[in-house]
Structure formats: C-alpha cells, structure tokens
Amino acid sequence: MSQFDYIKDIARFGLENDQERLLLVLNELIEHSKKNRKINFALQLQSILKENVRTHKTSTLSKIGSDNHFSKLDEREINDLILEKVTSDYSFENLVLDNSVAEDLKLFIKEHRAIEILRKFDLPIANKILLHGPSGCGKTLASYVIAGELNKMMNVVNLGAIVSSKLGETSKNLAKIFRKAAAEDCIIFIDEFDSLGKVRDYSQDHGEMKRVVNTILQLFDYLPQTTIVIAATNQKEMLDTALLRRFDLNVKFELPNESQILNLIELTLKNGVFKFSNNTSIKTVAKSAKGLSYYSIKKTLISAIKRSLFDSIDNKSIVPTNIDIKLWKEFIENEKKALL
Ligand SMILES: Nc1ncnc2c1ncn2[C@@H]1O[C@H](COP(=O)(O)OP(=O)(O)OP(=O)(O)O)[C@@H](O)[C@H]1O
Ligand SMILES: [Mg+2]
Image 1 (cartoon, protein in one colour):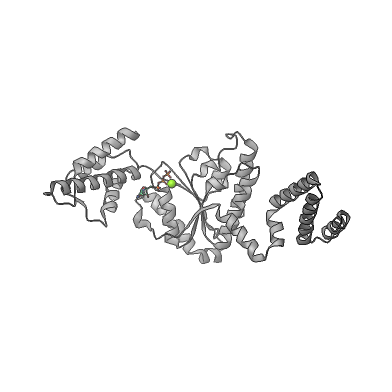
Image 2 (tube, rainbow, N blue to C red):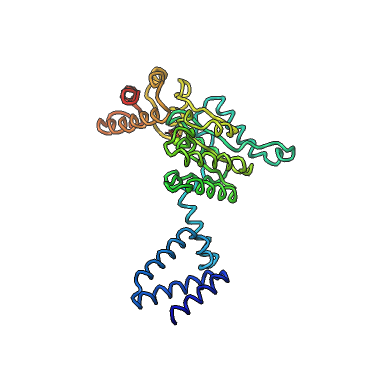
C-alpha cells in the first residue's frame, strides 16, 4: 500500500466515524513511515495518536474494546477514587455521645428508615450531614455507626486520589463518585472535608478551589434524597459558608466530660475480662483525664491494661485481670503532658 492509499483510508474511516478502523490504519501508516525512513513523520503521528487516546481514553476505548471491557475500565477508574467500601456492624452502643448529639443522629437514622412515609407527605429527607469537632472524639466512628444502623454500604472517599493537580480533574472525580454512590444507593463519606471545601479566598490556586466548591454545591443540590453524604472535619471554620448552609445536619463532637469518660471506661471494659481492683478512685482518675479526647483516654487505659497484665505475670502473685489504677493515672498525666 502506498502512502496515498493510507490517506484515502484515513479520510474514509474518519468521515464514516469508524474509530476502530481509523486507529488501525493510522497505526499501519506509522509502521509504513518507519520502514520508509520517515521517522519524524512517524513519531509526530504517533504522538498525535497517543495524546488523543489519552484525552479521549474512555470514548475511544469504548469503541475499540467490548462494552464489558469498557465498563471494567470505568469501574477501575472509579474504584481508585474510593479508599474503601465498607459495611459496618457498629451501632449506637459503640459510641459514647452527648445527649443532644445522640438525639440528632438518631433522628437522622429514623428519617432514612421512614423514607416512604416522608415521601407520602412530600416532606424533604435530610441526607447531608456534617460532623465536626476535635480529633479523636468519634466523627469517623459515628459515620460507621450511621452505616451500621442503616445497614448501608459506605464508600470512603480517597481524598489523595480525588484531589488532582490537573485543572478541572478534582471536580470531575467528585462527580464520578457522587454518580456511583447514587446508582448503588450507598453512603458517601468524605473525611477531612476541609481540604475540599475550604473558603474560596484561602487557597492559592484560587480558581481551581472555587471550581471544586461550586461543584460540591451543585452535586449537593442535585443529590437524590436517598443518597447520604457524611462529611467530617476538625476545621469547620475553614469551610465555605455557602457549603456549610447546604448541610441538613451540623453535628458537633466535643471532648468528653466526666460522666462520658466513665461511660467510655465501661464501654472499653465491657466485653473483656479486665477490671479495676478497687473502684473508689476511678472517679478521681476520670476527672483527671478531662481535656483529653476519647481516643487518648482509651489509648491510656489500654496501655494500663497491658502493663498491669505484664507486671502481674512477672510478679506471679497478683490476679492477672486487675488493672492498676495508679498506673493508668500515670499514663493519663503523661498523655496530658504530651498533648496539652
Ligand atoms: N465518642 C466516642 N465513643 C467511643 N469511642 C470513641 C469516641 N470517640 C473516639 N473513640 C475512640 O477513638 C477512636 C478514634 O475516633 P475517631 O476516629 O472516630 O475520631 P475522629 O473524631 O474521627 O478524629 P479525627 O478528627 O482525628 O479524624 C475510635 O475508633 C474509638 O475507639
Ligand atoms: Mg476521623
């Protein structure tokens, strides 16, 4: 075949919109040019082809491969944007909460269990919820509880993969995730939401951040009512006010007070064999833990349990399941010194 024959074929297949044969003949022309020492031309043609395949990756591939191949690729691309898909068996029993927070969350769950009733009366369903407050106070845990209570699959968004340096890509990625979640009727969980929804003026790449916030606003506005979005942040003040307004529920998680610390102790020891040898000073020690997060308190208690266990094994004399409360107090003080 001469160069002219290839050009004729390219014209024909191009005009007929026959991508598959167009690509074949272009590849043949590249090989033909290489053989005939038209290396520069071959390389230029090759880079045009590559660039086109890259930018129109999905549409081109959909025509080259089978439909099945295309949907697999598409699926893989979206899966990269999701950190994990989880089902959870957590319930409210796993979470120590302030009464008003518990009430808010329980009402939210109730709404989603009673969607049909709300629909019948044409009432809107709350589906966008913002969890905010200091680190280690149960925001992520609460999202698992919501998923567990509603028995729904939860897609945890992979922020690292979503936020792209390429212009417009972050918004596209977000749209893909929302579309998938709506189709699969699952919960979308966006942890560290502040990194997406920052105040428009804060960011250096002003234009791109504004675009991302606008995309989220749109996605929120067109979200099907049965699709739940949970966003969590410990920097609520960084969020765009327009975005803040879109949440149906704004739940504040706080550091535990004394009675919540006692509930946390009870919860932590509930299913284990460990207990305090004398209960009289627990309240005093709990009081001393004020100012620490649930996470830190639980961590110090678990450290005290382990140390008490090892000490008792070494000493052989003491009951191995007793927790040395003095040791725990010491760990609390150390933790406070390290953090506060
Ligand atoms: N309210 C709580 N009730 C019971 N356990 C809690 C609570 N808050 C935190 N914990 C314990 O601490 C761990 C970490 O909490 P979690 O990941 O939910 O904190 P977070 O608020 O999401 O923090 P961050 O802002 O750092 O993401 C939980 O897995 C749980 O063991
Ligand atoms: Mg968290």
